[in-house]
Image 1: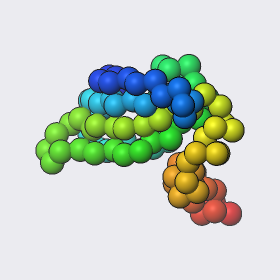
Image 2: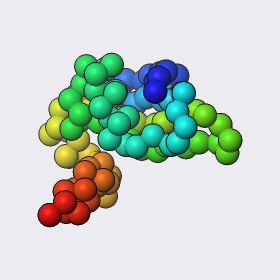
Image 3: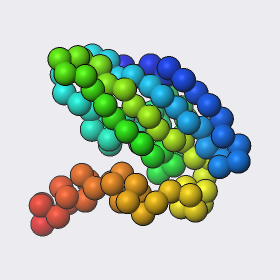
Image 4: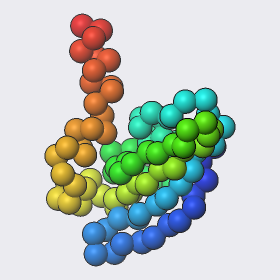
Length: 101
């Protein structure tokens, strides 16, 4: 999976970076967790400070377009983002843990 940043905008008022990126060379739509982990490494950010706004693919295409926010701190993320976005971020991991028990 290769991630290419298309657009990068600094939003100083909300203390975040707004990014648009494409993910290439995958067979299925990538999971939110795998994208967060890859972007945390490439952007040198904490995984808990990354929120994915959307992942979209075109039918038959092997590329996905991603819109995401990288917050400067966890406190600014907690203050700005909705509860739905925060819970959606880690939902697959929690489901796996519940299924294992």
